[in-house]
Image 1 (cartoon, rainbow over the protein chains, first blue to last red):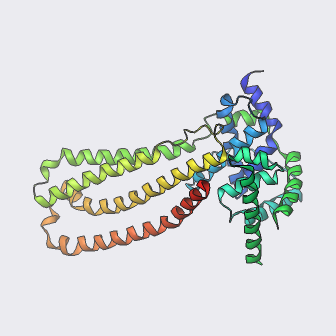
Image 2: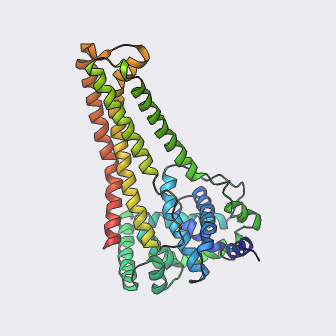
Image 3: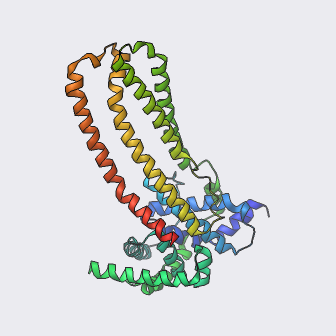
Length: 163
Length: 198
């Protein structure tokens, strides 16, 4: 199996992970698909430096979340990625509506968080342990706990403000 | 919805995504090719073009310097050249380091720190760029009129007592707006950096 085939196989196996990161950071469907493509491109760029020192999913989270940080900046400059002309996610109604509704609710909740807090929440939603979050984010596990409590407080305050 | 409720629903959404995500080999290959994505070039080329136009204008003024035969015109043309070089420099500085990072080698916190530092620098440069551009518009008026229409408007009292004061007031208002416009973004970026370093 050559490098490209190995990469494609890896992406196909972890496509859900990539789409979830894109969904978490992008505000709408169009941006989500742009970010999804950008993540795959950046994964391919970094593939040669992936040494199997960490698991594939850890490496993918790292590249995907780091890409999202830069994507937000580029996106503000209104520079869209060219469309591939294909819908990446196609699901029948009412599942599509339910998923979109969830993304909107989630975006509403996380918009008050800064990028550091967003990264922690993203991995928490994914069910990652404090140790895994700590190694992916690059802060101590106790700091992860402290920040998560602060995030809970922030979200509660935001809810009480909107109700 | 609280964090744990968000997490429970996230798991349900995940199942739907895994079930309906369409991604084939052909699509992945397309996404990894350089051809379809032109983000960087779309940022770099306009900035580069802007810088080159400024450089060309500065060279044109220097080339025609002998035509600025009064002290007033010489002062305005020198200031124009100085501002044009400054604008080119600011433009090129804002491009420095764009898209060179290997995003698989650093942690999220490190990437975020690098991104925030770069964002602060870029915002400051943009702010300087806008102020310099508005100042350049004033300084360039007499220089351009001399070069294109062969007239010396610095000899006219209406230039000194009407046009220049109005332009200076407008320039002051533009600068004030620019500083206010960037203040919030800069404050947020600086707060994030402080949080990352705490």
